[in-house]
Length: 372
Image 1: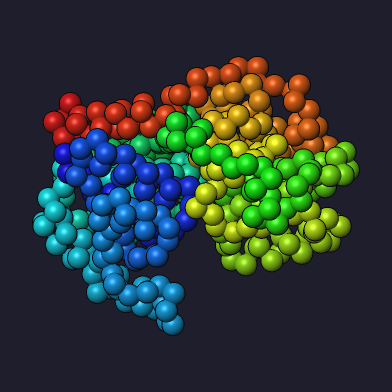
Image 2 (image 1 turned 30 degrees about the vertical axis):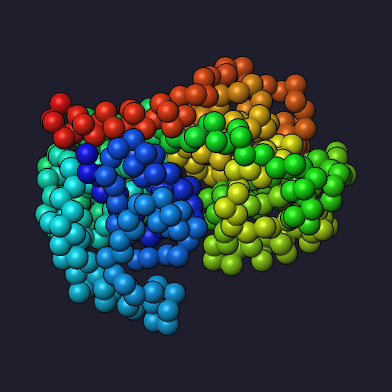
C-alpha cells in the first residue's frame, strides 16, 4: 500500500511527532510512504524520517525563515502549491492521502475524496476555530464528496460527526512505542548534571511547545504552592519557544521568587527519556486533544496530574489524576505531592501501543481503499 502524509511543515510539536513516528512504523510494516509539506523545516523530526528512509518532499523550496518569508509564502500559494501537489500525486500515485493539516489548496487536489483522511490533532471545536469558517465549509464539502475524518477520542468523534454532519469519522488514538519508551531511561543524577539541575529535589516537569494553550503561566503559579510545601522542589519545562513566551515565563518565575528553581532546556530529541526522571508530570492545559506526553509519562511509571481538558481516555494508571482548572493552586499542589490521591478508574495503557494502533490504522486504510 502506498500512503502519502501531508503536514504544513514538520516543526517540533505533538502532532508532528506522531506524524513522523506513524510514517516510520508504517514503513516498518511494509507500506510505501512519503511526507509532503508546504514548506520545509530542518528539524530533528525531518532528519529522523530521512535517516529512516522516508522521503520528505516540500512543495516549495524557499525558506520561511528567510527575509520576507511571509510575503514569499503568500506568493508561493498564489503561484500554486496545488500544481506542485498534483504533479506529485500523478508521479507518486498514492493509494491513500492522509492530511495532518488542511492545505490551502485541498479543494484543487486531483485525488478521490473517498481515499482521503483528515485528522483532528486538537479538539474538534478548537481545530475548526483555527481553520475558520471558510475552511470549515470546505471541509464539509469534502466530507460530502466522501472524505473521512479521524478523531483521537470517542468524544471528539461524536463532536466531528455532529459539527460536520458526516458518519465517516474514524477513531484512532495517538500511539507510541511503549517498549521503546520504557527502555529509554536516564540515570537521574546524570540527567540533572546534563541539564544543570541540582542532584537532590522533588522534580516537577511538563513537556510541550510553549504555546498559551498549554497554560504554563498557571503551571508556574501552581509550582509556587508546591514549593511552599516542598522547598526543594524544582520545575523542568521542556519544549520549543512560541512567540517569545520563554522569556516571559522566565520573568514570571523570577517575579514569584523562584527563578533559580525553574529550568528551560528547550527542544529536546530525548524528551521521552527525560520524562522518566520526573517525580511528577503536570499538564494544566486549557485545551488538549489527547495529551500524548501524559501517556509517555505513564508508560514510564511517573505520576501525572492533568487538567480536565485532557480526555479521560488518556488517564490509565492509578497515578494519573485530573484536576479542574477552577480548583485553587493549593488543590493542584496537593494532587502533585500526595501519591495517595489516585485515579479511581484505571485503564489498559497498551491500547495506545504502536503494536495495537498501527495495525488498526492499516486496517482502516484497506477499508477505504476497497470501499468497505
